Length: 148
Image (cartoon, rainbow, N blue to C red; front, side, top):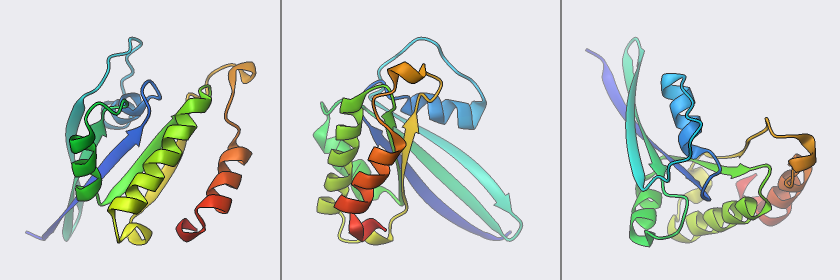
């Protein structure tokens, strides 16, 4: 039996941006049409790479900020982050900015932590898009140069 590595991926983002949908599509190849608010869901998946088994815990967090203690704990225990916004909801990118700032404030090692920012709901009509990729890219490069 080889080595076992455990990694915790935490999903952050505003409500109704599709965090749970991303997880369920990735893990189970399913999609639910109806919205159901998440408080906190934990999923586990194992990947066998011969001599190493990677155990991934995926923590799907609440989109609203009702549970600050849970949010702080999830940030403190993460090995990587996926921060999601909806391209049809400008306020959801404001939440991304807040999440990035929160991670920087809470984690002295934030520069070593993998952080992916993802725009979701790309299937919406082009006329519904409120958050352009270039605007996100510009904000990231101008305001978070330490994350480059």
